[in-house]
Image (cartoon, rainbow, N blue to C red):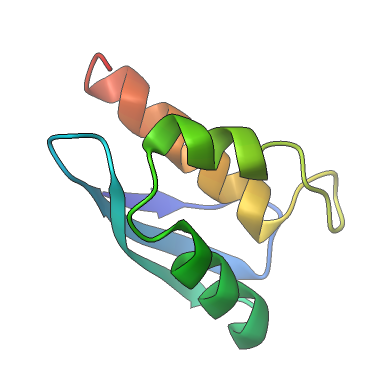
Length: 83
C-alpha cells in the first residue's frame, strides 16, 4: 500500500501486509532516515494490530509523527480490506 502522510517530514509510507496480517516491506519516503529506518526494521514481520497499538499516538510535532502516521496507514489498510 502507498499512504501519503500529513504533517510529517516523511511524505509517504509504502508497505505490504501478508495474508496472515504481518507487516512487511516498510519504506518511508522522506523523513529522518535514522528514525524511519528504525521504525521499519522494528515492525518488520509483526502483526498489524500489534504495530498499530505500539505506534498510535506517538507525537513529534503538529500532533503526529512518522510512527503515528504509519499507524494511521495501517488502520486505513485494515478498513479498506475489511480486516
